[in-house]
Length: 414
Image 1 (cartoon, rainbow, N blue to C red):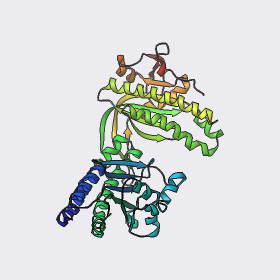
Image 2: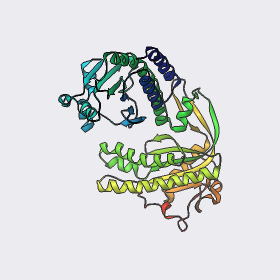
Image 3: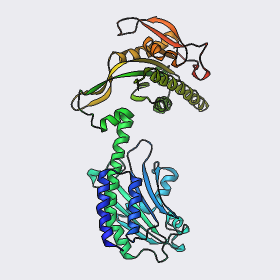
């Protein structure tokens, strides 16, 4: 083993972690350098829990089977069902429960019954296995992210030498620190974008956190809510309300984001989103396309919910375009990254008018003018006084006689 190269590897992985290199690149280079220093590793994996609405964590795996390759594997919750059973039968769970910092096993047929993971490794040609656990101090725990695991296999017939295991034990803390830095950055991005919206999350992480700092932007504004929501909440079982809101939010939010929009707020059954309007016709068309996709997703969702005898609803949507301020508003202790301006109030009032005129979609005259010939034909539904808006506004909807099938509304419940 080349001790000089191992020392250089310790310094390199520390610098790489501070530089913020992605985990896959970090793992691939670490393993290649370790092998070049004389460590006979054929398979290596680092497992890190995270704080994410969908995933419990991820694993970064390096394998040398003909060629070196690295894969990233996301995994779901391990606290119930088959995933929980599999985790409890793993070497990682054993380390966590026993308090031991390391587990080593020679891979033999006789040892297959202890851990299924080791039996799989033996059948794949591995001969020796070692796993390490790096725990975080209590103040460093974030959600379920309280430690980092790693495991290493060799296919050398005689297995790892004691010096190999000792070297891996010395190197692992450096790798764990680097992976923790990368994981914390990923957690921060996921939380900011999940709770603030993609664009707002990126701006906040980029340093836009000073109170009162806002950017004046041109935007298409989206405000939608659900028809008959109050009636549903009065009659449905309480434990059905949150799952119902999640179902419909998933349909609407996914459609908005797929067309480049940014969802800023979920207000009960309401959704406030923006499409930046550097080119107004393009942004207006994106909003119309998102409306069509959301409507189709809700049709399919309603079919599934009907089949399960669950309450169903539809979407009311108002679209508007105008100048708004986009940035931090609030107190010194509690800020919100959102949009403000008369146009925000107007789009919510336009959405509220959908019930009065029995239309699932209403757009402002400004939106209709900006869309022009770029999208489907619009038709006026008349001029209306909007609460809190000084002058009556002419509102438009899709021309039912010239509307593409994918944009035609489902029948609404009042």
